[in-house]
Image 1 (tube, helix red, strand yellow):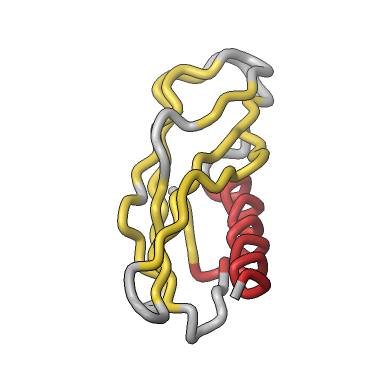
Image 2: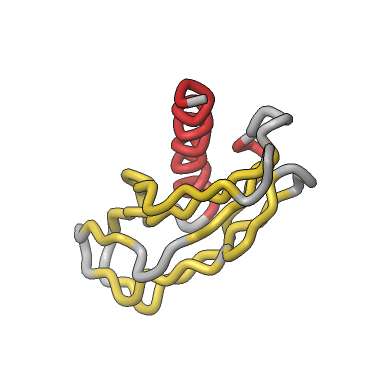
Length: 116
């Protein structure tokens, strides 16, 4: 069971790579930190993450992002992320977190998540 959870955590970490391509060309994503993991059903788990980004250009104001999923097995419970103002070259963590619910009977596919 713990090995399965580690695999899912690694797969969710791949989501971080998707953020840099979709949020903004000016933001580089860093770590996606697991804040909480809860079992909600026999095969369904909920994961809460906080995302870190680095601003590679000038000051940016009120940076936000929205996470969506095209998979019926990966449900976005809360996909709204806020970063607030980010100074040039600063690295910040999201003010809030994003939450997904994953059916563990189906492999997690981070390519089915998008961030705008």
